Length: 289
Image: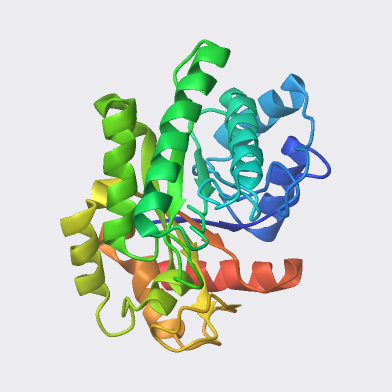
């Protein structure tokens, strides 16, 4: 089995998110702790977080996949953007110490002409430093694993190949100590890897074997389940509803049912309203049978 859900709004509080997802039929979900385009994160009471934690446990939810703001770019060419992005990362992780045992997923960033190697170095340096600072400030180990998302490779994105993601993991561990490796993982986006050139339609087993060879399947922690509007290797990153894109229902069903991907949280990021997500969650549950 897998856990299935979608993005929900944090605007009405943490417990409300869990109850709303349950009404949609899901048993995991994603949310942005701040506006997806940046800005200050929403304040939250300790009581609200505690209530959500109880709700998730009582209703057998899987791990949540919290999402960093889209504007966060810790390998930006401009120093002020890197500094602001670093502050967002630090603030999100510190607040999420009160919601342990889940995942914090973010886009590695765009090097904006600096080159892949420089981008990887800046991402790793920031991760190592922020993890240290959050643990020092909270007085406890990092409570949520940080996930690097697989990217489509548009523009100067870092992380569109398994090799680039592995380089970030390795360098972060080198800078922050080998024990930091267990605090990091990968979220695989089906639209992104397809757009990046990984053929999950006719070669899913090969793609997973390649991931295992380079990064290790033990480091694959979550899936973003999306169809794509684009052809294989387009590097464009345009999500589509399940079964209506160029990946297609059969291939996505194979992802959902793959024995190596069981027990993971699957997050829908398809262009839908609540009714659309209800239908897609029901579809995925049918695929699981």
